[in-house]
Amino acid sequence: NAGVTQTPKFQVLKTGQSMTLQCAQDMNHNSMYWYRQDPGMGLRLIYYSASEGTTDKGEVPNGYNVSRLNKREFSLRLESAAPSQTSVYFCASSDQRESSEQFFGPGTRLTVL
Amino acid sequence: EDKVVQSPLSLVVHEGDTVTLNCSYEVTNFRSLLWYKQEKKAPTFLFMLTSSGIEKKSGRLSSILDKKELFSILNITATQTGDSAVYLCAVPTQTGSARQLTFGSGTQLTVLP
Image 1 (cartoon, rainbow over the protein chains, first blue to last red):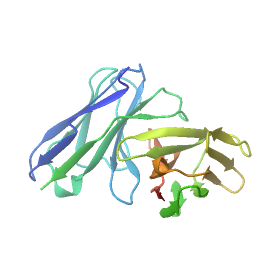
Image 2: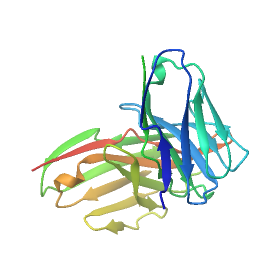
Image 3: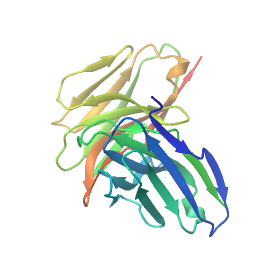
């Protein structure tokens, strides 16, 4: 099992460009998450999907959109990148129990110039 | 507002030392607390604690939860250079309709040979 995979691993964008971060999991989990991690800030939730076809905003959703394409895949889109979106982005998945462990992908390091 | 606070922010020790990392929390509807280890990439799960006073152990790592005083500690005995990492504490919380893990900012542990 690959677990949670993310592409790309690294990306450099110019201000105003758009891009989509891809995430897939092969653990048959219902819930998927997108976090960003900035120095000294821990991980902050951007968006969450409890199941296929549903998405919810997290703590820091502004400037992002998501699509839960099917049970396996959950993508994060930056329509018009800004330097404040320079960060490391992690996708995670879990089964639907609220207290359960989340499994993380390897992360995408994004730099917006 | 839900809060998870970790201390210290960073710690430098020598191999063989014992360390104690702290995590305090203020959340509504507390159910569990999770510890993760992050070495340069994705966080990996260590422990989930739900019951007060019951120690979880895995090799040289152990953790305990105090639900009355709202904190948890992670102990590492006989530290090794491979224990160098950021240790994250997280608690399941709810933001609107989104269920998420709220993370502390982490403790950066450096173990010197």
